[in-house]
Amino acid sequence: MRSAAAVSLWAVALLALLPGLILQSGDVRPSPALVAQGVVVAHTGVALVRVLTATTVRLVALGFWVFAYIWLGLAPLAQLATDTYPWAYRTGEGTALMAVAVVELGLLAHSAGAAVAARRDHARAAGPAAPAPGPAERLLSRRLAPWRLLSLCGLALALAVLLIPGQPGGITAYFTSRQALREAGDMDGSDGAFLSSLRNWSLSVPAFWALLGLLCVPCAPAGDRLLRGVRRLLLPLLLALNVVVNNPVSKPRFWVGTVLLTLLFTVPRLNRPRAFRVIAATLMATVLLVFPYSDYFRYSDRERFTVVSLSAQFTANGDYDAFQQVQTGIDYARDKGFAPRNVLGPALFPVPRSVWPDKPGDTGITLARYAGYDFLNLSAPLWIESYLWAGPPAVAVVFFLLGAAGRRMDDVRHRLRGRAGTLATLLVPAFAFYQIVFLRGSLLGIVGPLTLLTAVPLLVTTSTARAGRTVPSAQPTAPTRPAPIPTTGGHP
Image: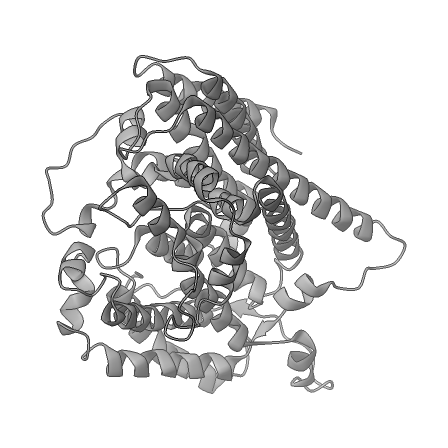
């Protein structure tokens, strides 16, 4: 049962204190869109209070509602109140109101999808007989296969030996700012930049999963002596590799945060509701107070560190351009119309443009060019991405399915929390935190790393039925525990 005191404190903070600080920080310009935005703030705030005070750990819901509350709740509230936005493009009052409506439509559809999934799960659990596992539960019940995992570790280390020396600048390139890499042509959208990005992600993702798998693979108290010895040898190597390829200097903040938070939630004690609430509160404070300044290592020419108000960050920092991009996309759709075929771009992202000359482009870049910007590396939130496919019906369908899938993942992970080394232990936290990038968009730029992020753990796990067949039935089943995190070396 939820604590009334915790609910009250979070409600005051999220529904009154933070919005009040934003509205008092400048000259508020009342408008219908600003009033409607108050509904979005209330919706996202209430949903986040429910997640933060729940009696179960819901990581996917936490990731979604943190993004919705900050990027599409508080940030637009500051922007609409002051009529100040990160970029130069401006829309009319009607477009702003329509943007708020599109955002709220997605939030309502997500809430509806999650509610339907929760009701179905409760109905199945209340049945007279134990329900058969569904597709999601069968998938997330897959167990780590030790020798597949060791093969992944060997592959990650082999790729490091082969690719790091071939990187321009060698190992120092991984401690070089992304601004310097872009100026060197490694992130400019050319074929060489694509190959460089592919090389970097093919190092980062396997190294991350190899380390996480070693920390989570079940360890029998007796036996597995060879596996234990190999693991002790590999852990320091993979810790060092992750420091190189997954550090905050050359990697995006969202990815580094995903790596650190996923590793954090491998600790069983931190998956209990009380510890989760403490971590979630810390995450909220970090995202609000630290995230705007965490791109310090992104640039080579670093300005003097200055702290400004939340309202100033939301209205001037391009990291919070999500709502403005929704407005720009609505104007773009009004001029150009909807394009259902654009959904094929992310779905068929591996197809090269030499084979598919008319392949849909990156939505963020398309909107930046439409607005007349020289800087093209802008976001395209899933709200406007789906809106451009087929209008409000597409938004409703996409977010209903996303809400249902997220709730299902959280429920299955909760049921499997006592089983060490399941795919739920690995994949759900990683997706929960990386979905912030997925929601921020654009899809064409994120679907490749997201596919790699989800495919690698599938390759190092096996179904529970097959895993059970490898254990002789005459032997008693020994309790298992995840591998302890070493006390030396640290992690990325």
